[in-house]
Image (cartoon, rainbow, N blue to C red; front, top):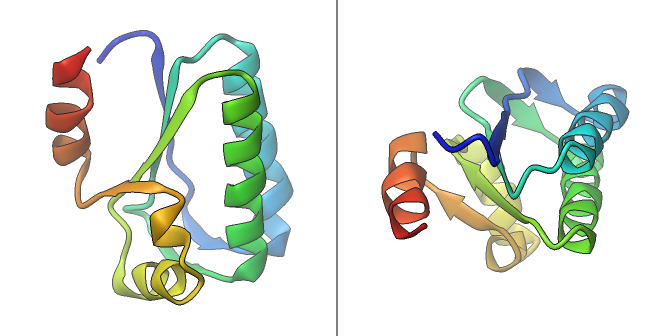
Length: 108
């Protein structure tokens, strides 16, 4: 992977208790010059509205730095949350990290 691509891989439950730490990690990656940030959800079992809010704020931070953010490997609960809130139209979501790599990185 390109050095400009950084991966954030939260684990467990992404809720209010993890939201601040998650946003901080994304901010640090943006500050370090990441062009693309991939949020890999393969180890996240549940996300609530606080976690979704943290994702939206992370996206704003990334866009303000003129970088890009992608999401991959969401489970059914998180996919349903995205669908219900129409966030599936806001975020670019890939089924797997491999799909992300073949579709995004191969075009760079």
